[in-house]
Length: 341
Image (cartoon, rainbow, N blue to C red):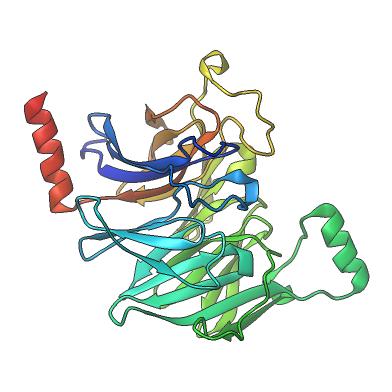
């Protein structure tokens, strides 16, 4: 790879941790030199203890106008480029937020606990609209079967999309039928996915207009022109599909020496080795996260794993959000660190 690897910002969650312990945090990583620094340690007393899987750390990341937006379970924290907290954004329908993204001065948030996507206008500073995507049960038997299996094979035609005002009390009731945990902007549309869906849904003009086939349990489904990428978490790999040529490739997560892993006695339901989450495409490489907290860099052309940066060997510690960061202060921080070393 001829071009230098980028600097990234990464969030982590710690699954099955206890009160009084760290629950993850925010890291700055220079992938070229492998230097990293933990700039936020998430150990606040007001952490929500009801999240799915026990992961209570910081989650999705988005950057806008020199500010860094970082999702916690039920609110969005806004930091300046020195990682000083400016404010937080809350809403009664923001429950178990995972990934977030920004496009055209709009912040899109996954409200997993309400099967919803919330839209926040960054210029006005207010929530604008909410979208609920919820399973349409065809019979009582299907509902019972769904509860027994905790998953259901569906296409987008079996989902109902509705809108609501996030500022009112007339929004959706609390329910997580699809585990919507990812939203990604593409052109004028939104690409929405969840671990209980085997379709990535295209939301356009308040309606579901299409879909892409994906496996159950995926994370971070994204579309870059003709390239569809996602974490195939159940199979410990990253998938890359060129929709134009109908070709695909898979990238295996880095091998791990289990003798070096701590807290490996934790149940797989809460934490496991090589759980893939967090993914971005940057130029000719894919940058993915896995547990225990690792950043994997793949060269798309060769299909090779070119670098792994290890942040932790605690199996509970998992990467969630990844974003390339190019803010001026961050660049100066690295120059100062290099000078002092």
